[in-house]
Length: 438
Image (tube, rainbow, N blue to C red; front, side, top):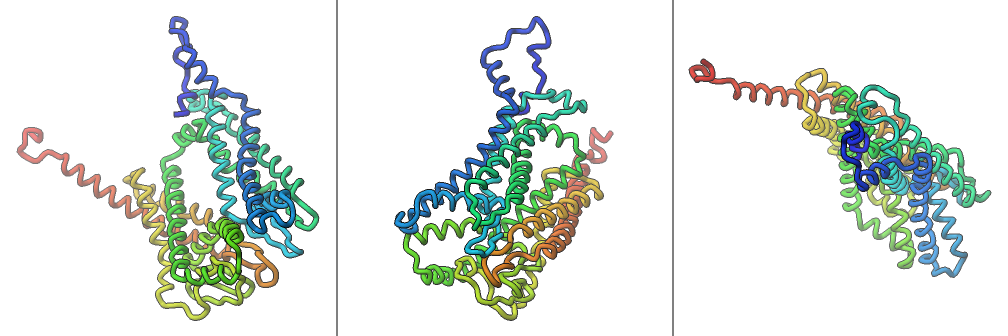
């Protein structure tokens, strides 16, 4: 839809053509809005939109905790801002104890906001630069890079201002990590959305080899499917021992307001739990404190804090024999997902089917390994300084399992598509003795 703004205007090529209507002129101007102003403002809006949500939750939480009997609304605002900064990797010190874990639930919300706002920015500036024909001819187009850089700058500046206002000497926030996370988040998600919204992504994708497009489709399908499977496994594990989670909440002796606030805060780390679940299924597993391990092969857990989601953990001791079979699930998921991805982009070449599946699986493994690296961190004093997946081991297992599974899926779907093509050719050949054969 937005690519129409990149097409050459045929009405202006000949002097005898009809004059452009007001609606056509307005539509064209809608895709040529000021790039510098709009892209920078878009980055600011993307950051502020989620920041405001966190500030509102902070104020509501301050009121629910003790009906405003202690402190002031600005304390709730500061808590909301600190939570938003935590989602950007700032870390925080609470009474001298470092907390470095990133609440990925808020990070996902920030990424979604950057994508939505970036898509609107891309549509609004799509008329800048060369048209589709000139881009296809190889003319350089700086619209997306410039807009992405300005978008990221606006986002990062907003994050720095928030950091300066909310930080205190006791919290000891890491400003460098905030800037890096802000640039990466807004650049990757916002920049991708700008490319899609401006129509450039479709033009660039058409110039890529079919194997690259197929590998990207396989990577996306494998990663999404694996996250869905990991979510289902986590939900089942929590449901099996849900009574323990309820018991934990009852032992906290929280009021209705405190329970609501605690549940909302717990929801922000559900994506972390999903990554933990995926790391467990891959084999290496994760830690829930120093000198602990949770994996299909062994479970060693010490004393744990009162946190409801920990009810999904298996019991310490020898694991059942069937848990070893869980490590075959990544291979199956990758093979199935790669085959389904290739159904939309069929190929009859064995080498291309193998490259698509294997390369897509390896890329999905790298992305999940990155998620495993950012899902953990310190969450408290003492043993709780080490909580998270065994990132490097997870990376190696994910690349291996997804790569081999993707290769099997790609080859299997190539065989199926070649078989279907031969059947179609056989049905289309005229039978001997028929008028078409003579």
